[in-house]
Length: 364
Ligand code: PEP
Ligand code: MN
Image (cartoon, rainbow, N blue to C red; front, side):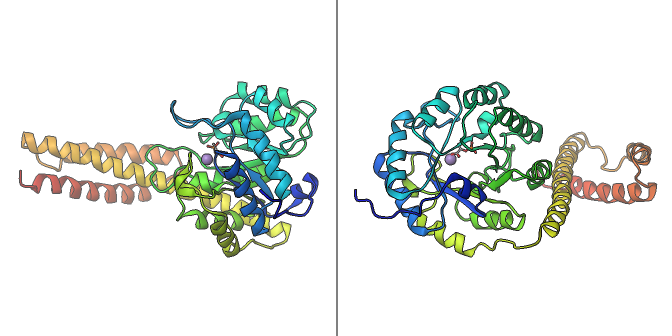
């Protein structure tokens, strides 16, 4: 293949300052041709700063494609030679760090499945001692910013000075809208905790699909993220991993054209960010309240089935006044007025009776 498209010679120093910092490339390196063509297509957009490719893939189940391994590292070197794009790979063990550094990989990232494990993060930190390479840390799979923070501390103690954070969302049971729920407030809390860290968003692993990428990318831009890591592939439908979420370089180019990056002074951005963090916490709680209320109604319906089978009336006044009295006592201890609790419980009671009535009235 001929040396065609090449981005201008960029130092890691200047790339690190770049905002928005755009990292893109396939979920997994599959073949040399796919890596090189992928990098050339991205370089041609003129909008991508770093090429990513997974070489070692931590997969949920055995038997899935687990990456090409170290054999893929020379492909990245060749892609860099042809395009000038710096290369980034995920590392999960000391050996992978050594192999990546031995092949001049420019940036490393720690994946979500690794950030959860302090032993693995420490092993990586030990292998990094003295290295100059920038390291990105993805949020852990579970919604725990202390683990994320702990990984940040371990890597910074290894004297790595360029540490970035990647927000890729959190695994949550039963969530359907996202592959990994963004829980924006957790990433914002992390950013407030480490205001100097580069924080980028990974819409690909949050969405798990293509049609919602743009909304998540824009949200990240609105929240003053420093950039994006987004998966792209020369033939997304036939990718060997994460096919549903990958896009072509051409589509990435279009999406990046549509994103509006905020340009505000530092004060208003941090004000906006802090306010948004609180709003996101409220949204999260409201969401949980609705889920709990819906589960509560499911139990009411279960009770209705039982009452119906045993020919008992829906309304049992004694039981309800006991529930309400308890709620008023607990609520008052938590700073909630008797008036509010009474109205809130009345509303719940009416809804619950309606659910029960539907069951009682249904013809068997
Ligand atoms: C990836 O970036 O391909 C990856 C494995 O991501 P995560 O660690 O976020 O699951
Ligand atoms: Mn992936």
